[in-house]
Amino acid sequence: MRVGTLNVGTMTGKARELADMMQRRKVDILCVQETRWKGSKARSLGAGFKLFYHGTDGKRNGVGVILKEEFVRNVLEVKRVSDRVMSLKL
Image 1 (cartoon, rainbow, N blue to C red):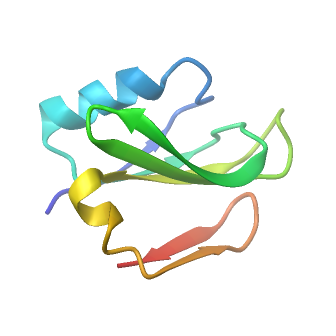
Image 2: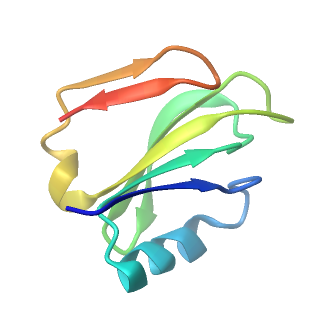
């Protein structure tokens, strides 16, 4: 299992790019910072990846975790503490 972290600056328009990068580098779990997306949701990025994210302001901060689809069914708990901290229990 390969785990990584990345400061994306913003997720807007980068979802497919991140999924491609994760495939190329064989990363299974990627923690992302500064997503700059508002809300507490999960969304499919395509290419077999799913993003769980949390943000309170669309202009700054925001965090997320991108999982390979094979790990998504193993998610037991998602704790969204703040727009800077979140955790997933697998």
